[in-house]
Amino acid sequence: MIRATADADGLSFKGTVNGAVVYLDTWAIGDLAERAHPRRTRFIEAMRGMDLLFSVTNAAELSGPQGRSADAVRAFLDEIGPRWVPAELSLIDVMDREMASTLNEGSPCVSESFMKSFVVHVLRSYAPGSGKVIGLSDDFFKLGSVLDWMNPQRESIRKSLTDWDDLLRNKIGEISEKAKQNSRWLDERFPRIPFHPVRRACFVFGNLLRMLVDEGGAIQKGDGMDFCHAVVASAYASFATLDKRWKRRVESLPKPNQLAHIYSPSELDQMVTDMELWLAQREAS
Image 1: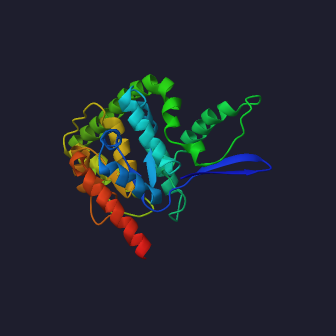
Image 2: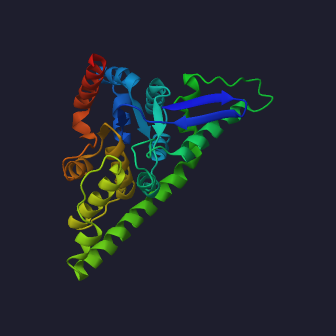
Image 3: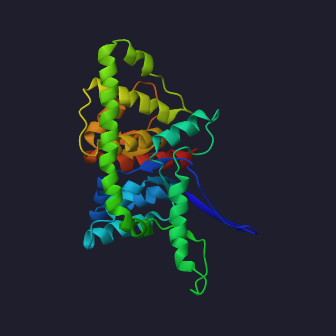
């Protein structure tokens, strides 16, 4: 959740993850938003006690559609209110934060740069002379306004997705080539590592990269960013939606672990039910 405080030095903003966290792939946001289904109402009610992990690529993809679809998505995101945190998609930054920590403190998956840029965008409408007073209510952080901020940047972000695919493809190819030259190299450099609660992203990144190499390294369009989403979502969410390929991969990672429960497109009802059960158990305890 994003929180704001005001003091003599001005405004300060901080994004933190507390309790259960939900990650929705773009297809899941569209499905929940656009279908006139009790599931949407149940999901929003469950989110009162959880936080949504939301990325810039989610915003860029959702800012494109117009008309009734866009209206439904915006209304859905606004209903979530301030209960969201900006997801960090730089896996290097996330893993560096993990490696620098000895305790599971803070939220390595939260993107401070995303949050600050968004706040700057919102504050522009409160410029001197506007006659508007900054009110740090829940409406200030409505998630729907992120779509307005991201829309002008949509094309540049879409182009960068190709770079992510190329980066992953080149990395997999480099690892595969070295593994062919030395049968022990893969086990030495990318061993199957056990889960550690403070090194969540490191665990998923290393084992998932190894899995892609073992699969033959066939990278499809969009896999670069999907890889980043799969790492952050599975490592730091409690409930996460991914397509069937990435769900299978995450569920094949070494066990035991404390990763998110992953749901495919046919399992949204089950996800909402599990969220409700989690809330009921928390209230009972």
